[in-house]
Length: 244
Image 1 (cartoon, rainbow, N blue to C red):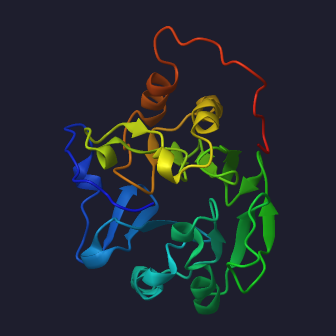
Image 2 (tube, one colour; image 1 turned 135 degrees about the vertical axis):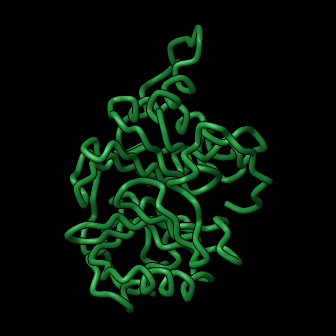
């Protein structure tokens, strides 16, 4: 994704937990670090590190931010052991090889992703819908791209949502809510909306996104309000299903 409009504030976003330091790192949830990879620490591109016994990096930004990504990771003082790719867009997989070169990581890539031309080192693990990946359940949410995944850890009350949704303030609306990704960047926006229903099978208070502001409280509730709008009719046609 590209151009990002100015953001709007939402009073219920927990700013104290999300203030960005001069190192371009902030903490949107307990045990999670958001790495801001854009110019001057902006969130134009980002990645997430889930700390713990085996620190895990979710996505690796575009190739143009490789130096910043590695600098941010070194600055955390943790040795990343796993790299999980949510989908193979350039701004999520571009730093894959840089991370592999810098750290002894085990790599996880969706089984639907075609990364043969994008990465020099083949993935260690190909994951699918329902798999346990680094303590999160992988949820296939195709639409934005056929290989798009979200990850939910109900024990942490946390969802890392890939590009299943974006923050509403990316499109000039108040922060603290979700929107579908922009149609111009999406493979099948109808499937993207329909498949959001899969995420309602899970509970998560915090929903982290890669474009626009994340939703830091009542995330699943707000997603349900967006997906299950009043007088919503039944979908026509076959369910796109896992693997669509």
